[in-house]
Length: 140
Image 1: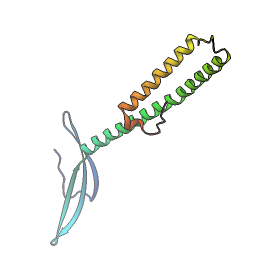
Image 2 (image 1 turned 90 degrees about the vertical axis):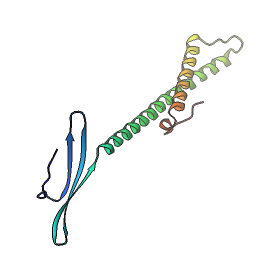
Image 3 (image 1 turned 180 degrees about the horizontal axis):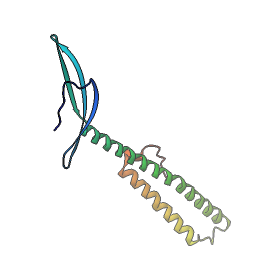
Image 4 (image 1 turned 180 degrees about the vertical axis):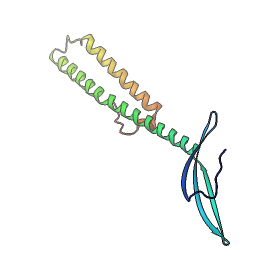
């Protein structure tokens, strides 16, 4: 509970009222007015609680989208470089002795790992299409 008197100065004020489990924020605007030769004071209250909750939710969504976009992009770039180097190595060695060439197990494992990571990035893009659309480069 609070009291305001007509002696308040004109202007804008921020108020926070707390109860046991909730906090309510108000914007208070005080205007002095003259009506029919009588001076009056107008008190205009605006509840900012819902606006603040909505703003917080929107900011969280924006940060999540930026994080997902950055993470997928930062993974995708080195992953494609690694994959390209592995493919080039395989092609070079396969051309030297095509009949008896068998890739080393480490190369096969690395190719499998890059394929799994590439699929993981695609899955993230499917689950969060809007968040990962910013700056997305399609992986092959």
